[in-house]
Image (cartoon, rainbow, N blue to C red; front, side):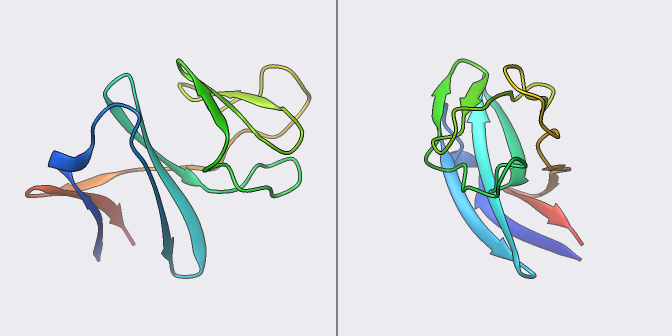
Length: 99
């Protein structure tokens, strides 16, 4: 089942949108013109990532400063589990995910 999250026309560079799907808090972000969908929680202690600092492809959690490379999902400055990324699906002019 396809769950639409956003219209493609709205996915400009720097876009950030938060969504809740089946009890999961998700963050859709556009970096280098590529949409990335992930859990909206830092794997370190669960802090929300939607208010983190974005520099290039690096997202820094605002709670403890752990920085993640969005191209891989890996933490680069601390031993931490990678970001929980999800695969995007497309249907017409919408982006979302398949459940």
